[in-house]
Length: 230
Image (tube, one colour):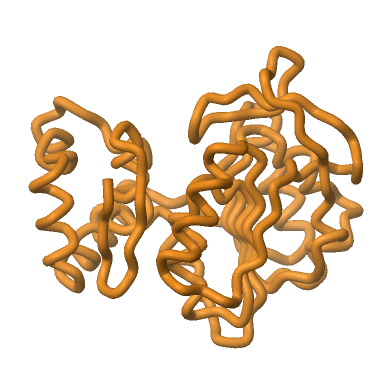
């Protein structure tokens, strides 16, 4: 299924249409303000929704995605938008390089686990380079990457992390504050404001998406929940 947002086009499997809404309409990562000289890390790029949205604003985007089928679609969406400043990495981010780990394929909720079906190699953020902006959605592995002593955080101006598990919820904000970051949670009011702004600025893309999926209509009727609004 093909979606548009201004000049951006993105292909998604039918069952993942909510990814378009989460990133382009609800704007769950919109508070990351990317500048033209920024090098951005998309940690957990999935099919490339965040990557294609920010690539034209940034100097470079490094998109890391371990799932083979999602990585294939990530590559296709980068090519579809004719992006030349995106580096694609088909590995799993972890605290050490070169390990073999197993990934359980649960789509956007895929994670490293012994019960996983797909074996991939790990890579560290330090091995990938230095980043000004980081978006991180890696289903619990963030606790392996965000630690008191990590060097890669020294270069980061803005970071957005989706936190999983009580330990990460308690520890990671504390670590980020100690490293000088101002930490805040994205609220439901933030997401509602983003939704209004994004629909207003790109009404045609939204109308086409609703004609195909009726996702927001179903959400308002409480027949369906957009994941970012849970």
